[in-house]
Image (tube, rainbow, N blue to C red; front, side):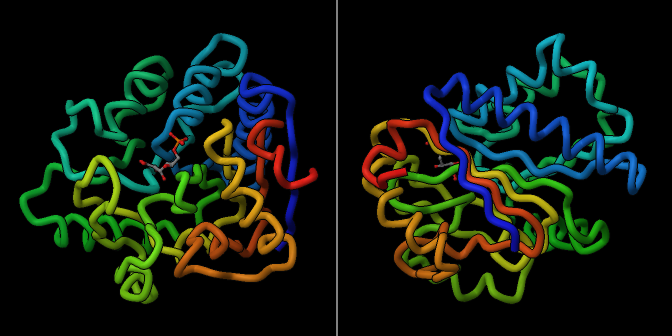
Length: 244
Ligand code: 6PG
């Protein structure tokens, strides 16, 4: 694994740096393999990144015809529910860029049987193999995607690409999530963390990340150690207790 930890002064600068990395990986993937496979994430900073990518300046630098969009996680709600990651992605990005609809692979959060939806999405992921880029955020408790501390799915998830945990925090919903083995098979993972509420957790997490130590039970995000490149992008406030 190649590790990069970058700190920017403001959230806006984090979003800008993330958009540049997104474009760079997209262009390189299309050049080398003819397509760009990316997984989006829920969360507030990803929403700002989507909006940046949809802007004129960035939109035109991406070959949307050859871009395939996946989701790292989804909440068990209807696709028009305001808690749906699919809805957030449509409103902030997908409705504003020329990505062909059949290139967008939503997780079926509204399925009556979530396990079926997980199996089906897992098969799709197995077919495509590794993704070029997976975007992730970190919750205040150290979760990522929908892999929560002390959740039984951390174990169960070892053998599957997609698991069905229940969020122990608001909103207390069942979810679908990519699992660690799949996240860690990616060529690039980009973790975006901004804001004061993350500072303390970041001060526990980053020393482990730097020494490649995993504490999946208590700090699930430390288990993200992909085969390719891992980039952490933080704003100064989130990194303020770590001496970065
Ligand atoms: C979700 C996410 C989740 C998120 C983090 C950080 O759908 O809830 O995928 O893992 O990325 O909780 O979210 P913020 O960026 O909003 O803090």
